[in-house]
Image (cartoon, rainbow, N blue to C red; front, side):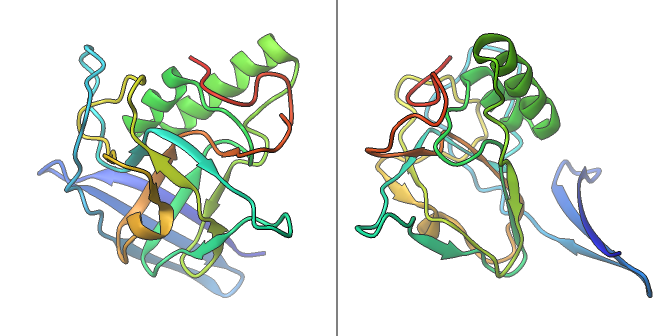
Length: 196
């Protein structure tokens, strides 16, 4: 069977490169994509950690359409978006910071472990990477007013939809924010709202 693997690497000049390897029965191909690292930051965590420029950080939510479906947007060519928690889930600030440094696996593992201990369930269930051309929920990123966002992470000054943030050829990027569905009941205890 075929599969898609996404690998982030840093070049000697510190620039992030996203390599997408697609394997198939007939062989394997590798394609490299660039990453727009022109990121801004609104707050510092006061630690030595630095965001790698690939994460959109802040508060996140989405409002359902009148029929109950979620509005979507198409991921542009050359852009891969990882959302580390399922739909209508909170993301811990500390897990978000790990994701902001580029340690997506570490951020997801921390979120999963803490949730299992605290709630007996795992809010990372449903985590996904959306590939170019796929539809993803058109989440809204809000300012990170009370969060500890790392320098170098992408933030916004006012509510901004994913469709206005994503551009072609951004490479591998991460949604380091909640995925709360407004006016929906909590999927699991504690899943809604800010959770440090």
